[in-house]
Image (cartoon, rainbow, N blue to C red):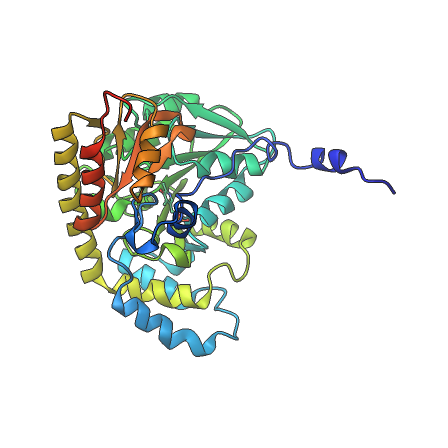
Length: 375
Ligand SMILES: *Cc1c(COP(=O)(O)O)cnc(C)c1O
């Protein structure tokens, strides 16, 4: 039996070999190693994480859970589902818990997509949608963006007889764009009732726009709607990996069938429950974000740079030139930003909103840049 690795590789699910793996933000320790910098001097504004650090109540909940570490977690996440149900006025059987909301997006792809079907998503939309779609051998049905945001009427028109899922991010990452309630309702009237609409609301907690469509409130009107939320951003639990979906119980039942039985670990379950109860932490994070956005946009305005208006905890800055060298200049000064050339936006860098001091580090390096010269 000789080696037949080439043929073996060709046997992979069609689409897997072609997919572009997710490119995460550069970790602080990696940059420290690469450039010989002190990790404490590095500021990471690259992954839209909560700059407040973990909530005290979360840390206490994790500590209380530690003695149970030898036990499997509650595979049904009973207590967290109870807490989510009462907080968002849902029934526990409408909820699917995930190892981050990326996991939930994957469950949706596995339950509803297969070769020969397609998923509709927008140009510049979150990179996980094409990855989850291609991983199960389904086709990408990408719709050109409008002003960097989702063109919902074009997306409705792009739906064909093989479309099973539409992925929407509101606000979208990496652009920060938002669509409003009326536009979304019109879109839902145009989508066939047997096409699943996934409304990814990873940043909903940061939005104060009164025109924002709260997906969970709209669930009662649309049986083909799935809303995904995460504990990774405003709730400050990115490393613990907890996300969830709310949907009709029939959809949740399907997603829970393909879910790994223990996809959310016990520390994450306890932490998420505590995070949900810590309203002050959520409010402090939102306030810090609102202030940070003003701080950063004022600096961008002063520098004469344009940016995509954002509703999230990050902002995509247009440097009007390829940003590879600019990004490198920030890295050398210990500021990690997120290049988004892989999204088709080579002239933009995405900046996560940090603490006031972290934002100031970004602004200081920005003001030192000679954007007309060698930068
Ligand atoms: C960060 C993010 C998520 C959340 O990912 P997790 O797996 O929950 O950490 C989901 N959707 C979008 C658009 C995001 O930016």
